[in-house]
Image (cartoon, rainbow over all chains, first blue to last red; front, side):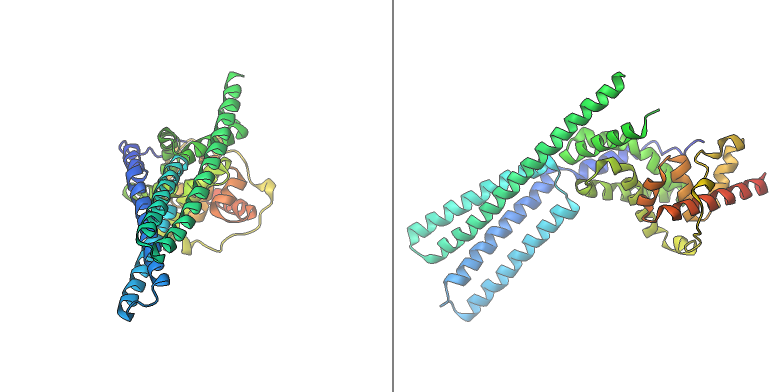
Length: 166
Length: 183
């Protein structure tokens, strides 16, 4: 039986849609948003925790900023897991970005703490260290998964090659 | 003709290449599957424009969902399952009208070959297929025209295998009836 033939332009439309959906810059934009939101939240929360003498209005403003930061963080994480999903190679790039950014954040916060002798930069550095450990874990997992998939791909290509030779 | 095993291996390889982020993997996924998915969606909608719109939606769901597909050998059931769910979202009323007609059928009563030898009017068959209730049409299309196994169809449609058999049995009977009325 003949199948309904797809319109001639359909494959091209799907290719365009795929290229648009999988464009790396749009994903890295959300990775950057996630990292920036994490850093902002860490700084604001560190200020709130270490500066109890702040005026009530300032504390409230900082509280609102913390909520905004966490909301952006959740939004970026949602987009990256549901809409602009990260594939194997993307995850490694994103993981490296996260590790580099978190390391710079920690070093920067420690340097500011060292020069100002205040507690809040050290609190931010501690949260940055948590971000860094999460980033390292994500990168290690992404690399493991990439290696596992690559190994299985090579096995399958070998198996299918043998089958074709028969 | 590829065996079921090599078909599964091919599907798994294609899935993994996409999951790794290979651009050529997605090219091959489109080249391999846009035709069969189009044929399935087109037969169920009966309309080119609606099929085109639905297929783009299906494709978006495929791109977004493929990193979470754990067993790549089930790619074809997964793809048709997505197409089916997208169709259900668009054709909810038509699906609702054809629900709850399933009955129990013995395995032996489902012929595994398409009724090719009985048919010399393929256009008539296509027209008769369009007149079947949606649930029967999708089962007939997947089993006889897309060559999915009963288990793969059950997985794609999220129904027990017995229900698939029931729909195939009834669909085939209705198809024969429509064909004899038409010709």
